[in-house]
Image (tube, rainbow over all chains, first blue to last red; front, side, top):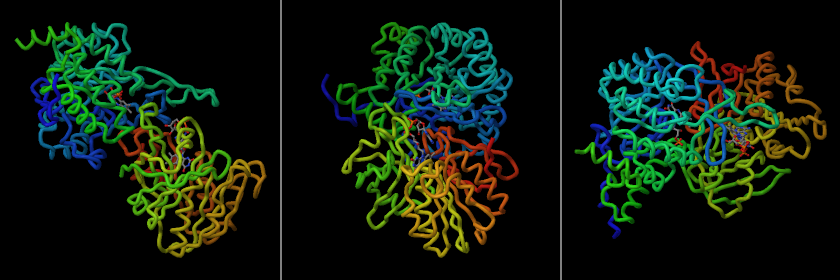
Length: 322
Length: 258
Ligand SMILES: Cc1cc2nc3c(=O)[nH]c(=O)nc-3n(C[C@H](O)[C@H](O)[C@H](O)COP(=O)(O)OP(=O)(O)OC[C@H]3O[C@@H](n4cnc5c(N)ncnc54)[C@H](O)[C@@H]3O)c2cc1C
Ligand SMILES: Cc1cc2nc3c(=O)[nH]c(=O)nc-3n(C[C@H](O)[C@H](O)[C@H](O)COP(=O)(O)O)c2cc1C
């Protein structure tokens, strides 16, 4: 293919009813509510923003240490520390209103179905919230979270209950800690999910061998970062060929090439998590790297890359478009 | 805030302890004592986390910032291989440093191990505003003792070592008696958590207010990951505040240890 001028590349992708200006958004819990990063660059550059998990009432989170480094990755056991949905609505989200065309996706977590439903109901009144991301995959809280995401029946029940209460589209965030990710994806689709995002973190552990005890106070934590990219790509590839709803790729994205890899696997957009910690400018850099890669490869529309390496997913995508 | 900073000097000042000076005019102008810089030790993603190191000295006229660090694990070992002239990816200065109180007549500075570096710039600023400075610094052993000469430029320095190879044998708290803190308006402490805990208890008993610079494992360094929190009692309730953004320095009376 003949190279193009970088300015001729159309980066827009369609996610449900949202036309995103590019396919790159920060991942939940890796961007807080955006205020800190806004000191580094214009958040209006992002395709969308996914904010920290929000629960019904304030949560203090887990004891420290909560983070540990691993080869090309990290473990975290934050434990969903957040001020609760009321304060999120009052204090954390309003500053995002000043950005034009920046869809705000709110990640929702909890310990019981009723909690999730109540949070989603309260978010439903906010015109600022473009979509809900249902976190049924947090490995770091004792009850709830991941248990909904590893049991087919519970996941379906949760999704159905939340869909009934939601006024915004519901993206269900899947856990990789399951035997059959395609089956979970299908269960969520059948229960009414509008889209899926995957993956959340993989459960892991490190031991401080001098102290002879797990390094994290919580014992286990969630593994993220470049180390998990191949696992995430495989799961996106599998899920995109299994469901008709859009899939957002998450896991280890640190460069434009990584983002293109997820798109070709069948994702319509990507989320960037851990890379924001290494490089606070990761998201805008990745957007420019996607643009440059497309230009150099003669790809005029980034949307044309979606499922390019995944024939079964491409077939489903074409059927959906008909 | 984020800079590619040229390394001006990088020398081993004690066994396994390095003095690293880099060129960063903005940071040199704006950094306050107790703040830290978050350094990326490799340009690949093999190390996804930066390493927090306290600002030890700034020289605005030279545009330089100095940190002093101990080789601890893989990241600082990697950092130690970078030579003068190389470019360093530095984020910062970050966090809330030690508040200076203009009217203070006398301040006691307490440092342990690689908690001593931030006290040097602090001592300089306190001395410059006319506050008399006395430092108490503790190390495991003589070979790891650092920066006493630098601190001595600004006031008396007492040294303790765990093994008695230098100064007094024992812990820094052994020095902190009623007579020693006489007339001190405030103390400032930085070091390992058990030391901070002991200093907090001792100084509360002696009724001297002060500040602690806390050490927690950090992720991002600027408040987005919520990894490095510490329980702080403020506004009548216990809150998990971010040591990277709300700290690392907190009023000693607010800091809870479990
Ligand atoms: C605000 C702050 C200021 C600091 N200032 C200094 C300083 O001036 N001089 C100095 O020598 N050290 C300082 N430290 C400690 C220093 O950051 C750690 O020793 C260093 O990060 C260890 O990295 P490593 O790769 O050698 O060890 P590894 O064990 O390989 O590190 C793995 C991970 O654990 C973290 N980690 C390991 N030990 C510590 C520790 N003791 N405290 C915090 N994080 C840790 C690392 O940052 C990294 O994320 C400071 C820590 C904090 C929080
Ligand atoms: C510190 C940290 C906090 C996280 N918090 C959340 C969260 O609140 N909700 C959620 O759905 N995922 C959370 N995640 C998972 C990320 O959104 C993402 O799915 C995962 O880290 C994989 O992407 P990455 O490799 O790009 O980081 C968190 C991850 C990290 C590292």
